[in-house]
Length: 94
Image (cartoon, rainbow, N blue to C red; front, top):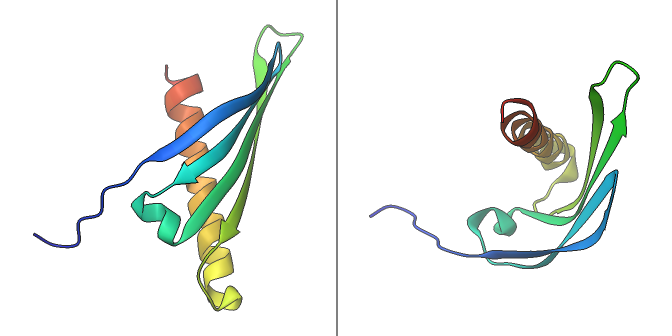
C-alpha cells in the first residue's frame, strides 16, 4: 500500500572523547538517502561555569536533488529540523 521503502542506515562512532563524539555513515539504504546523504555528525559538548553544558552539532551532508536553487535551502532546513529534534529529544528532554 502506498510508497513503502525499507532500508537501513549503518553508522559508526569514529571518534569519542570527554567532550566530543563523531559519527560517520558507512552505508544508507533508507528512504531519506534517496534525497539526502548524511556523511558525518560531530557533537561538541562544552561545560559552562553555571553547571550547564553547551552543545554544538555539526552535520555534513550531500544534497541529492536538483536544482540547487530550490532544493539547497529545503535540504538545509530539513537537516536543521533533524538536528533540533535530535538535540531536544536525546539531550534536553531526556
